[in-house]
Length: 327
Image (tube, rainbow, N blue to C red):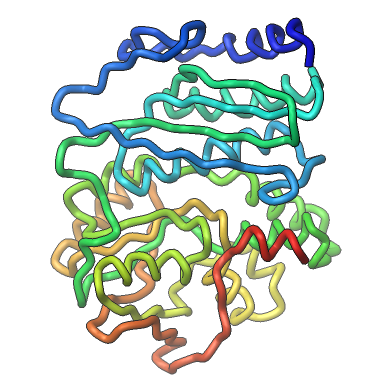
């Protein structure tokens, strides 16, 4: 791309409404200068999305931008951090003003919702890819981690699970659905999931462990189990299933299996000591945040799936971008 095109791209990203008071220097210099609130730790996460692996090259750029930022903000939510700043590295095969305009619209729409300021980045020519580094802060010693869970702790998830996998299957034409409105709703949810930032901050000092669901509930819960040296029982009938997913699937069991393995949900999975469960449920209900108690941690290693108390033996796996791309 010519120098003039890079300048034009830069102008797109300068038109943001967020100007945080803790940003001393942002776009236009070699580095950004930021101030972390006293008594807080800096939380940082970086993720890359590549066309053909994380999204189709002809996907709606507004939705792609939303998904890219939402997935990064979800990492901060999982740690109980408050989002503040983001940098963006964008690789474009060619200059496409219409694509860039829609991308910026989706990006800044979500950034403004969470008061996140774009503080810098880079643009270069090459295969379409997006790399974001989000930064936020969390009170010292209050970050949620994966290693604090204990046997008998209750297992919760926010929101509903499985819609992202159903939407992706429709996008890739692995599944068919005659109901156009239903198909559109599920495909939109694959891209337009919302990071659970408020839930994450409310769980400080209450959840014993937490993470976001990016690779599927079973796969991601396994990280908590490994770090905390515990096992789990999951009650499949308690999994939160949307009306759309229930209508899309042929049986309740199929919907439950999809909920267990669906990746890129960006909901939170967290554990809570039994004595705090009532408080957490009341707190979330007061804020209008849906949570579901779906199981319990055990001393026995591994994950046991129970359906109305009866063991089930479903062959499940987490989301694998490389495997999916090769199909």
